[in-house]
Image (tube, each protein chain N blue to C red):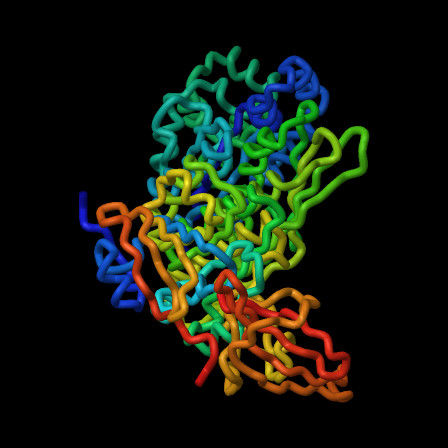
Amino acid sequence: MSAALWLCIRLPRLAHEALAVAADHSASTDEPAAADRATIEHSAIAHTAMERLAAWAYQWSSLVSYRLPDGPLLWLEVGASRALFGGHAALLAKLEAELTQLGYSHVCALAPSPTGAALLTQVQQQRCVTTRSQLRSRLEPLPLSLLALPQAVLAALQSAGLRRIGQLLALPAAAIARRFGPQTCLYLRRLCGTASDPRPAWRLPVTYRARFEFGSEVHATTALLFPLRRLLLEFQGYLRGRDCAVLRFTLEFEHYRHAASGLTIGMSAPTRDAAQFLLLARERLQAAVLPAPVSALSLAALEFTAATVVQADLFGSNAQQLQQLQLLLDRMQARLGTEQVRGLALTADHRPEHAWGFVTPARSTPAAETQAPARPCTLLHSPRRIEPPERLLSGPERIESGWWDGGDATRDYYVAGTEDGARLWVFQDLAEGAWYLQGLWT
Amino acid sequence: MAPRLAAPSGFPELDASLPGGGWPVGAIAELMSDAIGIGELSLLVPVLSRLARAGRYIAWIAPPYLPYAPALAQRGLPLERMLLVQTRSLQESLWATEQALRCPAVGAVLGWPAYIIDKNVRRLQLAAEAGGSLGILYRPPEAARESSPAALRLRLHAASDGLAVEIHKSRGGRAGLTLRVGVAPTVAA
């Protein structure tokens, strides 16, 4: 078993930044109001922000933990995963880059004990140690004031003439327990990694729901993009942690004086890429009209799929091209509507207007035999009644349909010419004698 | 200027008169047809077919009439490569045209803008360049009276034996020629 190694992230401005991210990017928000709310709802905001960060952190470690009474600290057990991510320096670099992208100030430290890692987030440098002996030598010169002990205990240590953590650790355990209480003794053993220091494992929720409350109402949809980006990055972390992907997720907008509104973002293939999510969400937001200014934004996903589903029915294209096409289709369908982007296919029907149909784009369809005489490249949406044509260039081709397919009709099709040189595909309905235009030889 | 890529039109008489020997790849070509139904789409069938058979998609952005699948299949176009996009406004059409042109999986984009200003033609041309695709804009015959930044502009007239193609503007080539092009027959023998 690899030795436990704890990564602790201190988020000194968690609640403030959870709110400010919206305020900073919205011209219509006033800072003081946002700051007031930050103090009033500090703990609630810190809690929801921490929940989202825990889900995000799950991609790096399956043991994620936080206890808000301890402060804005998030722990990840990375003893096993650091090998996976190419050493702890590489892991830290990736993690810190994403935290910066998310817009959170942060200090990270690494130590063999969670308590030790938490303490090291308060020092200026050399915050990463990997063995217990390294941890002890790193702790010894540090001031006692960094210890997470009750104020009374710190004062007692002070009056006993102790200044450095090393001085305290040099005392016999029994003496520490007698003079400063057994809790102090246990704390020091946990700090050094010699006593067990169990952490409640944060549980990955089965469905995903993240909520982001704004300090004040957001009026412009563009101001929603930054917080949305944060939600999507956190969502991506959650999906990576679960090793799954989604085909759709929902954005819900809360308003002060209006019922909540929502948008469902769908994709043609399982996706977990935040950049692609953002692209699609942006298209939809640009096209959407929100009923009122937004006071909170939520992201929800209920169904998950395996991350790597190969769409075998997509016609022999290479993978990269397929991805590019999917991105295009998703963008178009997000902005224009799903029904607005379609493919074409043949159907086995001898009646011209039923010999084809719309299908899901880019799907292979069985090739139907076409033995019919030449057909024009374009068709009118429905036949249009015309005067009997003066110039028939060729025909007739008789097409009959009977009671069995819904219309008892016989048509004689011709190619007709017009004065300006166009060629029309026309037919005469033999029952009623009337002439119709159905297609154009474009 | 670097030699431009061209996609053979499938009509030797036309290729001989176009720089690079075909339709300009990574650029916009405007087709101004005197009337609807004189073979203006048939002129493109060989190049579209070639692109689609090479695995690229053909995007039809808001065509005024339905592309008729049985006819396209008869002429050798693989239907699974066709993308038909409906829009509600000119703005949406231009946006969709640009998106499709930029996508490397798309080989050609056909648009029918009712009205388009030079700035937008330029924008589409940049998109075509980025995506390495062929952009075709069908424009009304009156558009020939105005200039346009499109790389190639053709006027199409009906002719008894096919289509008369007048080269109105050809970047890096010769303008003013009119050619007879035998587009696909209207009626099978």
